[in-house]
Length: 281
Image (cartoon, rainbow, N blue to C red; front, top):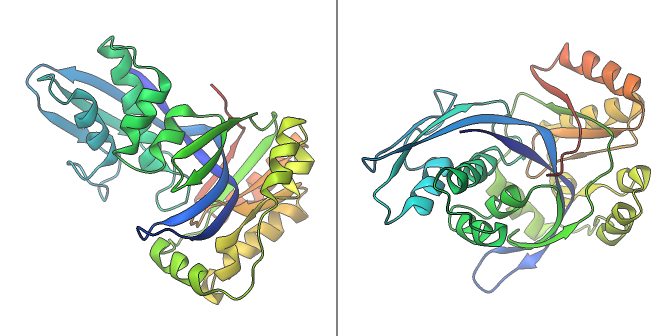
């Protein structure tokens, strides 16, 4: 079975503090986009698992979230799976590529085995693979709380053009969390306002409220992120933000021509640049 693993964007990202078990308490609004990886999943009768991850530097064994998800789904059945990935979601971008692949595998196996597990059961299984997997199973838009696994579905972002651009560097997620824990400023996204704007189908209202608290602790060496944000807004984006722990930046456009011009300008300088739209199942 062939299936698409849709990338995700953070319309907002807030870190509320640390929980007693050492995890961070998050509050985020997440949205899937039409752009993503393409996977082919095939059942095996011998209980073995293989994966072609699509890039030589990605794990091709049980460390890969897609394999982990497949093993969880097929546990106790004696079945295995061959997984092939055409990798399109940029790696270390904050777009949930590994989690999206795991979720796509769960959806595919649910059909191939004719088990027909409901979405909430698939989400619960996906959580055992990773915190972002339940949202990637659900897709569309959601308020994500806790570690990101407590999901409240919300109206999806209305149709608009989305330009995504990733600079040629990654950002350490543990380093960002450490800086957020010690930050002095308390800039926060207007998550409640974003949810209200989604309810009313107000794309400009969402765009002007987007904010990611990780942007508040970026260092000088990550200044290119702010340069891309400025370039997107100067090109006509209604708003722009970094997604997840970066380093991808995205802008929302209500003008298709302006979005295309921004994409063409940025893609001339950045290898990982994409023009897409919001996606809801």
